[in-house]
Length: 244
Image (cartoon, rainbow, N blue to C red):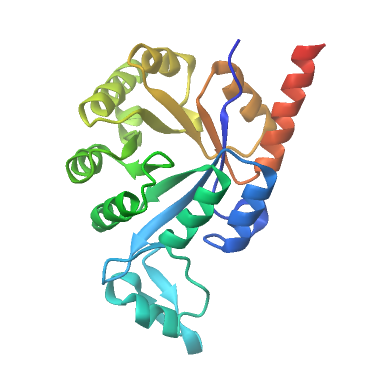
């Protein structure tokens, strides 16, 4: 019998603003296993929660994270900016884990340094890394656990079997512990191949209960969703069905 997958709350879960303290708190209050958010760095190398480089500034202006220092950002941003260091402190108090979705290669080294300084390598792992970034991350911080973001184009251009084989080989070569896969690309063949290579499969980003049930039955390691309450309800329904 498969255990139920880890429940990963995607940034902006439960309808809260993405990269916000409200979203983080809502996920943790529900009791999710993992919180996922996007990571970029300021021009002075401070990791922050952000999906895009562009940020809204005061008086309707726009700026670029890669051109702003943290001090400039905090003085002029139109919305609060969460520091990764502060979020990791919250994560540490809860005993949960965090998936750091790296959005720029420039973030790899500052994130590696921060995680080491905070002694959080057992509580975090990286995603957002296709093969080249995963190899680079392995050189910068070999103590960091990493998922390989599969090359989605290979699933379009190659046969499914060859795309799966390529993904597993790249994950092992780059020192990754698992595959980060859009849920539409997950099939039993991929899960079987990943198990043979001792690789976990993380499926993202799932909205519908039927898809959640199917992926759980197939045995993925984690399901990422914007609606963790729905996924928790699926888990509880599965447990009730098994108990009958």
